[in-house]
Length: 253
Image 1 (cartoon, helix red, strand yellow):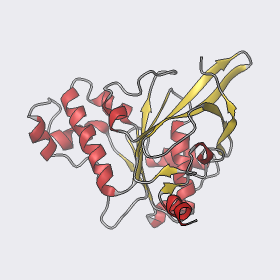
Image 2 (cartoon, one colour):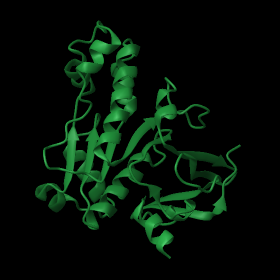
Image 3 (cartoon, helix red, strand yellow):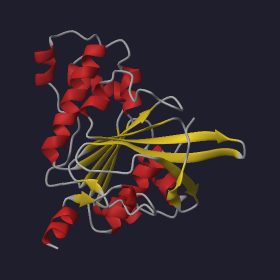
């Protein structure tokens, strides 16, 4: 019984219908850094926003960093699923930041030219700014793809930024989710390959063409600190958010 209680304290319950049962301990290992990968429109951002809403309702603080959408658009998107976060944003419990990825590179590296040694660049980096006395349980970065696009000719800068970002997450004690855009059926989950090596877990979203039409699926591809179901299973995007069906296996090919 004591072991069961200890395990529960060390996992993060998403409370997304059907998802937590895919993990043997009933949730995601806390303080993990996870990639949320998949093609366009497969439910990656919905998953992270639904998770944030569920956790702030339970009293936790969350931080959502967007390199693509404004705070207003994110709040409007969440409201369309019935997740009104205005009260939590106003109280400071839910922090939404919109950052221009080009500004990130300028702030962290001084220029976009890619000059300087890796040691010099590393000394300049604070990957994200968390307000003093704000201790988020969850940090979402939406998305790494935007940073890749901004640093397409500055590969050294991007690699240094990623290494610092993952180290930063470890220091915060938060459970972090980094969204990455991929091909519909990826064999790699990032352009550089660094993200998937550094990540503690990878959750993959699919849109699968079947004779009856396209269906959504989700797979826990990797989870470093927890045993999990290794199948891709059916998922639906409903007016209330994501619904996962663990009993319905999906053949991807």
